[in-house]
Image (tube, rainbow, N blue to C red):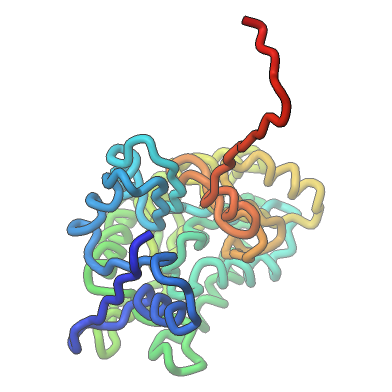
Length: 316
C-alpha cells in the first residue's frame, strides 16, 4: 500500500460524510494506506477505480442501473453491491392492525422515505384492507412536515430538486395509470423541497409500485388472500428488505421464507439494519451481504498455505 493521500476540500466545498470519516480515522491513528478516500462524481472517477487492475474488489451502494454498469466494467473482480429496493410490507388477514399501522407509518416515511429498505408498497389482505387504510391514513395525516431541526418534525425535505422532480413524476404517472391519491399535497418550505406525505391506493402495476420512489410516498395494494399477497410481494425486479404481519408467528415465518428478498421481518418494519446481521438483497437489489461476519467474508479471501515437512512420494 502507498502512503495515504489527505484531500483538503476548498473553502466552498461541503464536507462530505466520506471526508469526515477519513479525518476521524486519520486522527484516531489509522496507519497510512489502510484507507484511501477519493472525492468526485461517479462519472469522473467511478470507471477508473472499477476498471483499474489494482482494484481486486469493488463495493458499491447505490442505484441498480449503476450497479449493472459496474458488473459490466469490473472484469474478474469480487463484487459486493447493495442496490435499489421496492420493499413490500404485507398485512395478512389475522394481523394486529394497530401494530401493522405503526410499522407501516415508520417503514414508509422514516427519513422522508429516503432509505433503500423503506416500505415502497403496503400489501393488505382484502379482509382487512379498508380498516387498515382508514387507520393508516388517519395516522399519516398527523405527521408534521417541516424543518428537520425541529424535534416535532416527522417529514423533512427531500435531498434535492432532481429527486423531488422524480418523485412527483412517479406520482403523476401512477395517477394517470389509475391510482387513487387519498393523501398528498404540493411541495413547499423555504427550499421548496418539502413534500407532504402521499398515500395512494392502486394495483401493483402503477409507477409508484413498480419503481423505487425514494420519497414520502406509499402505495397501498389490496390482495385477495395470502397467496395473492405473496405473488404481489414477489412481482418486482427487486428483493432487498420486506416484512409480514400476522398473529400466527409460524405462519409469518413460512410466508417470509417464500419472499424473494434478502431480508424479511415478521411483525416488524422492513427498515432494519443491525450491525451483527446479514444485510443484502436478491435479484436486482444486489450481490453479497454486509454486516457482522458476513462483511468479513465479503472483504477477505482464503489463502491456503501448506508446508511439507517430509519427503512426499508422488504417484508418477
